[in-house]
Image (cartoon, rainbow, N blue to C red; front, side, top):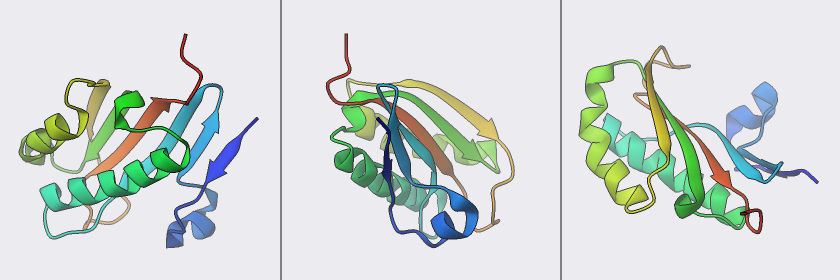
Amino acid sequence: MIKRISSGGEFEAKIGYCRAVVAGGFVHVAGTVGQGDDVVAQCKSAFEVIEKALAEAGASLADAVRVNYYLPDAAEFEPCWPVLAEKFGANPPAATMVECNLIDPKYRIEIELTALAPNSCC
């Protein structure tokens, strides 16, 4: 069974994707950007969207197993570390940070996450 979760974002319909898909025992959350004037504000905002999608799937950040961070400037990643440590606490997922261009220069971070779906653990 596949469950698709939409956040109602303008690009979902334009590009043809959904915020998250629950399939194969996992919740796959699409790359998510946030709003705000700097990378930290955008990071926090992106997590709000991600957490809402996870909640709709019956999961939370405690269920995260993999997270990818994409930033146009790797030097902006370190200011986000306290946010990440707070969000994941004692349940940190495997993680990767990649320096790359994003869809619009106003975006300073994009976060993609995979979590274990409810009732699918060993």
